[in-house]
Image 1 (cartoon, helix red, strand yellow):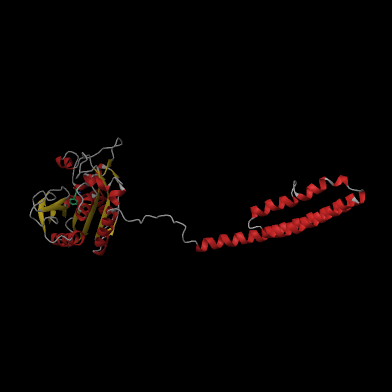
Image 2 (cartoon, rainbow, N blue to C red):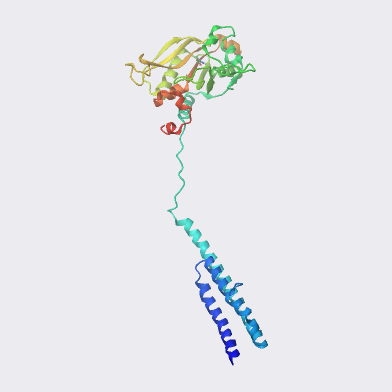
Length: 347
Ligand code: PHE
């Protein structure tokens, strides 16, 4: 009788395990909770295993029934577990998707707004202006032969004018170009007139670096060759250029010497900071020199195989960094090349 009661109890207990498992597994809120609960009922150390461990104390027939009942229930619990697991996985996926769609509170990554380096900005302005005037942008090598940097520009090796450019010499005899005028010489050989070109690029000089001198700087050469180019064309175009680029209202031309032009000139603008009264920028002269220029020297044409009795031209070499300094009111050229964001972000 006693044994019988135990046997009935255990059968009831097995039924209760299924009932509880059905209830609790389906109430699990996440996969973790589900796994833990599953183990409580059907795991290696779970309630069903516990019953089977004590099965030896029952009669043969009882053992068989308890065993098969337990197995049956275990399968059912596994089934419930599997279904709930799928449900929870589904819910989690949907929740993840919804979170992506609607959670506007997740902090974003701050992306700094990019802007152009002042030299690039001015370069683009200058190119715009001269393209509008019919000039084409060309380029030449930064490492040059002495021929294109000097000889072809009417500056022979033994001529004192070579001292005008403080030159670096490489061991192989080439030189980092001291001015973009080397591109003039190359283009005159390459192209047949008429042509109008501008050649922006880096140049190098053996300078002691200070606020207004760098060993590397940006220049832009301009060259206009045609049958009837006159000094007044040079004056008109360059006057318009400084008006457009710097808002210069008053300008003047002074005679100057550059071996590859004749006559040679310097274009000055009325100081845009003091209006001509005199200040530190214009060194109290009221004028700021901005563009060296002149009419192409007949010898330069001859070197390039262009007949100077048929063609004439004008050339200019604009210091870019100078224009940037004036445009943005910078008093130290070095600031432009240090890559210091505190400075660059102010432009
Ligand atoms: N190449 C000259 C310089 O760097 C400038 C220049 C260019 C002058 C063209 C006249 C004509 O000093």
